[in-house]
Length: 128
Image 1: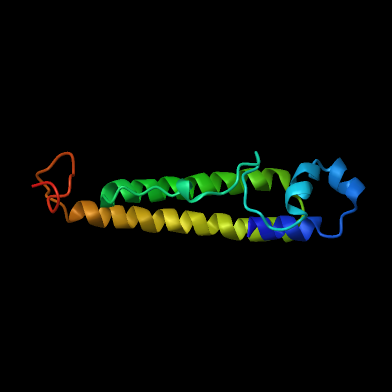
Image 2: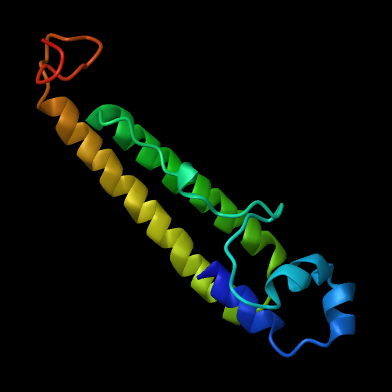
């Protein structure tokens, strides 16, 4: 969605506006097409997804990912003043908060169903 918003904001720009906005290197590689990358220009990669196959570890990773996304949306909102940008970003931010809460509930349920005598909360299904 962020890439789509950037596309909508940049379509129709003149070459002079593109250069003045610091988008000339991006334009050379991608024109103004949607190409997911970080603000620093690092392309999106599946390497961002983390999975260990352990429910507790993976739920913590999921919760961290939601919080990192929320922080990114917070930072975008600090710079954006256009309501057509802010409104979808606020929606996405709220969605990250709800996801974080649901992953937290799943983590609690997981802990509740583990061996309660195990202080370190390992999964007795795997660690016998």
